Amino acid sequence: MTQHPYDEIEAFALGSLDDQTQRAVLDHADTCPSCAVLLADAMSGLGALAALETPRPLERDLALPFTAPAVAARVTPLRRVSLSAWAAFAAAAACLALLFWNVQLCNEAISVPVGALVHSHFIHHALRGPSASAKAIQAVDGHWVYVVADGLSPGARYVVWETRAGATTRASTLTANRNGQATAYMEQTAGAIDAVALAPEGKDPSDPSALRWP
Image (cartoon, rainbow, N blue to C red; front, side, top):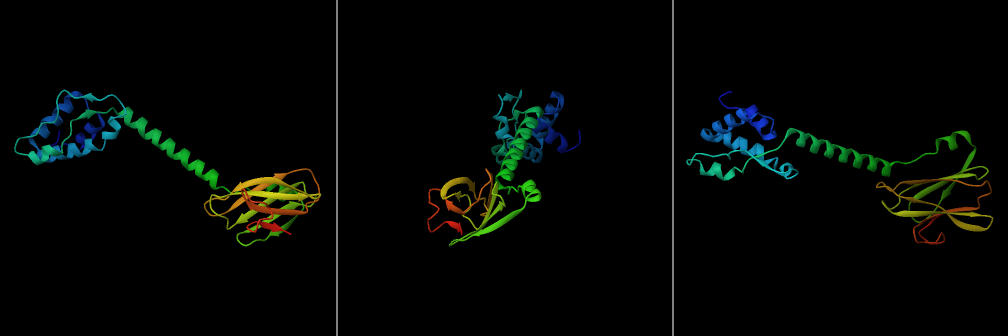
């Protein structure tokens, strides 16, 4: 062991040393206040991890010379934490972070009906209102409609209203992402579309806040 066992101190905190080397690190810390402080700092970062499993105390706690009361006050009782527990905790945290990131990506994604746009003839209509902007893109025969909107209230839910043959019905719903953008794609029986409106959830298509065509 070197005069100051820096590598061993880090390994000690992770619980990856054998018993003989652990005792050697403790013996050195008994006579070296600076290494005792380093050991205490290394162990303090694992306090939360130690609570995940049943603590397994070492045969002895870290004892410091009486001449270093300030250092002794900083030292917490030592607990052994296995390297496997640390790896499992890190892996679980990474999985949760990845899951959260993927969910966020799904929530923020703007869907585009590529097949419908590529393989169909279509027309579009501007939906007009006091705020925000939207367009209704539809197949010429009306068998699909794609609504795109910008400038909406982030996180707000909206209803797409459609009028066909004199009857106005709820065609779809959409939720604006954090940028105030949203899309909705609907497939339906072919037929003429007389009007399209985009209104906040709970509001009628005739509400002043709605976006409408014509």
